Length: 172
Length: 172
DNA sequence: TGGGATAACATGGGATTATATGGGATACAA
DNA sequence: TTGTATCCCATATAATCCCATGTTATCCCA
Image 1 (cartoon, helix red, strand yellow):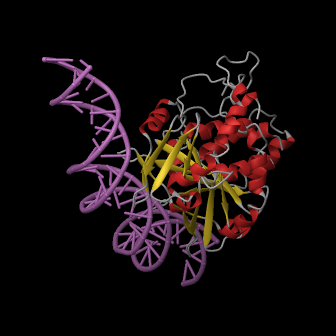
Image 2: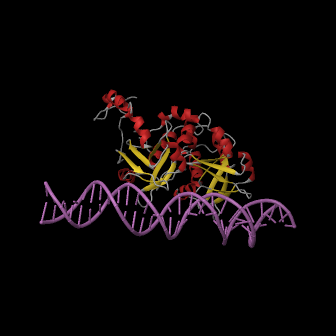
Image 3: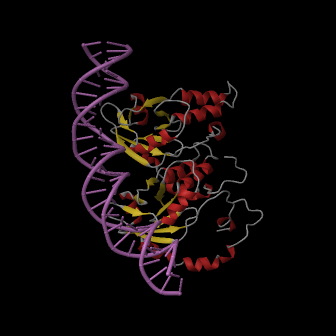
């Protein structure tokens, strides 16, 4: 981990996903997206008219990652700098773009999580949204608890990375 | 092949092709284009009135590539920046423009895949659409499974390519 | 600052619509 | 004709819309 991880170089008005919220998953597979997250999505400009979230299975474990459609648009822009048949580009496109789902909000701000995603993340009645800035994660509350172990220690060791002023040479 | 040759310079509202969907190919050679993909196509502006998808054999394997008509318009714009008889330009024109088909939607959002394209992609009863952002791929489910080999590991190693913030020099 | 009024939010369930898919009828070309 | 492609309609399933409700948070005024 290096300083770039927390570096900011953001331009324009972009909301952030913050806080951790647990909501319930009903019998139809629906779950309310936290209101704060919905606000973040609607205030972040995007090229797409899509009103909802995008979710895909994490590459790292049994949980989901997600964000607004603008997050994927940023990924797209990054990948466009590579050649069309570049292996690394393809791998990311397959594992993120092809693996993701567009989940539209219903009138009450809920989305329905497809069954295969339930299963991937081991979801069962309750769902925890973890705000991580530009994106968020979706966990089974139990699995998230396990993951917390060890994070505190690492966060303490890494405190020196926190800066309240942008480094002058930051390119991000 | 150079990425710049096929680079896109899209402006305005555009949708993205996301997720992976398997539909069935009936006895008449018809297959439903996933509703999300149709929505993406209809929300992306184009100079053409054509309502359907454009498909051509991949240059890289036994599968098809496709997108909305606007994708081909973007390719055209990129190629226009080259000399008329430039070798790369000609090659791409032959292998993509000349090899591609315009497949119109029927009333139910299906297209008929020509038999030679079936055969090229080894399609047989089932057809998988793979959303990759600006374009999509069409695979035989079995062949797609094989293709996944090693992709997860490569995607994990390549994650550093994904940036959520545009480089400061980006013009977009 | 207390406390009632109002609004926002999360959630349940039934009604309605969209989607994928099959099959027949019709137009067209070789 | 004979095969091919297009259009139209039917249907089971799945997804979405819509309304109702309890709860929490926020506002407003005395």
